[in-house]
Picture 1 (cartoon, rainbow over the protein chains, first blue to last red):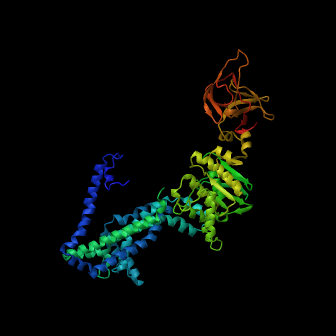
Picture 2: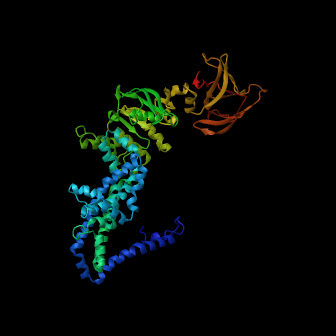
Picture 3: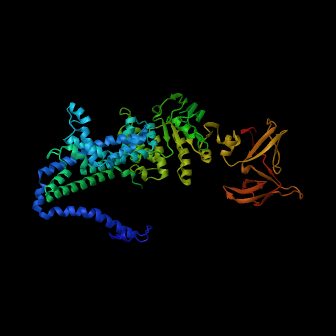
Length: 283
Length: 354
């Protein structure tokens, strides 16, 4: 039997009181706050004509900025996977002294105003900062280049990985490891096959969240990035630059591309996560 | 493989509480032993100690007279089935079963085709044909149970350790899998230890029963011995419903405190003194009136029939006592003058004395 696309709306006899009213409210709310702004973003850039838009899309400075944003977000999210995994492990299994404090501190990058973390990182890793001075002695520079951007994005992205992995790790029954041990698995085999493998969906989710946050991050990056066009300029900053130049088509063109690529990568990551989590679907 | 447990002691971490209190146990090759006891008696602790999953404070476990010091010594030689099965959720049934073979070092690992064939064999043995590609989340409880067994048996262990394996199954599946497990044990020539809190299950499936209480072995005997000569009043009560009557042995006769219970002659060697007589409800008999003058002071109220027995309750003073008699005795109404409990076992200070 084929159901009409709006059958869900009729759904008579639902146990929820006021089903239709609440559904209407929810749809209106989502439409107003999410769909409407996003569709304006899709329409607006074309208002000054397709030629202007195509020109804006071919701007090499914009392409460089997009590349910087996406590559740095990707690298930072990837680096956060092992770090976040270890931290989640320590929190869930370690029972170390002070783990409650550490547990609270993990979320700090989420609560901190991004400008504060940006300034902190810039002073710490700048050429004259505590760590920056030490690192420059070794010939490593982590400020005013892409390394600085990655560093800042790792800082803000870490909680996402930890919070995605930790509950799954905590719920992994200890008997699984014992069973594997009794079946003759060696410690690294237990780690890879019994602990890491079921965590894969959670790790992908953590990666996706950290990546998404990394693309949109602005405040914590600009202080440490140096913001040189074609080198260490991120896409969100370029939007601000364009707006200050009153170049609205240019700004919205970047926003449009950013939106499309972000949606695409989130869809990809979501698909990947579902593929890795086939086993968890109940009968 | 024979298993020998010598003077095993395990203290609860950080305390002096003894989870296992000097436990020794010898299990010959091919035996099917059930560890029974109430919750917290140390059954699972003993099983885990035999598997080497927990460190013990002292004592040793020998497998075929060879001491086992770590889980590694036991790997592949002992199959263990956990209470919650502990199936790897992210692997298919076939991968779960093959796990013990897959993790062998390359030099010892059988060829891929052999492993696949072994998995097929086991799936067939467990009546799970065609389930190899499914994930554990899609299986029923009974199927998961059998996958866990197949996984434990894949490496060809001679010893099978089962920790309350039937706990989560419904009664019908439970009964059929019980009989099937016993058959499997006999067919593969395994030595099996089963932990259960269900004494009926133990009596049905095992040929030896080890009763545990607060970290000690109270009695280690065959089901028949256990029924005829329970070592303590706890064992008597644990193995089935039991009624106890306090009294005193005087000159070879047990005289009960309750006047409505007839005295009876005790076996030789029971010294005089206070004792407790314990009896199963189906062993109680009712003394019928012999003359017109006898007062019918016992009236048993029927409470339905179960398993070929008519159940009654009878009141003696303040107490309500269960009483069963076979269905084929046709008089439904039961009245009498006194209770005959001469088939009781006698206990003194909790220990069997006659």
